[in-house]
Image (cartoon, rainbow, N blue to C red; front, top):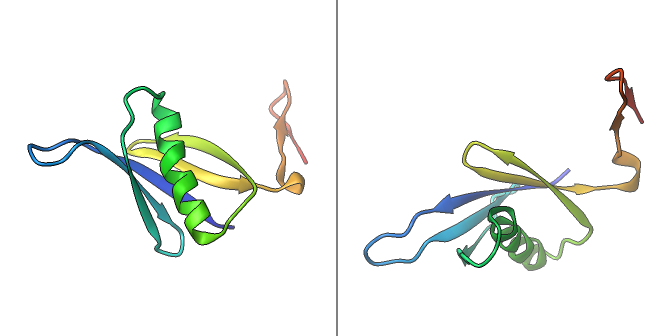
Length: 90
């Protein structure tokens, strides 16, 4: 399973803020941080740019981590539901 991890890169005196995306296999893409978007959407734009660059397609789902987000592709067979009793159903 391939993943994409994103992180926020703050602005400096010379450069605007950016979001960097890194794939499991070491490929990278960077986009300018769009303050008009929600935080997760800004990170999604970097993940999308990288996925398109690599020719990947599918449904991405995101989860936040301390320094950004992790995006994974969801296959229809990889859905898990946690019920009221915290049982995992596949």
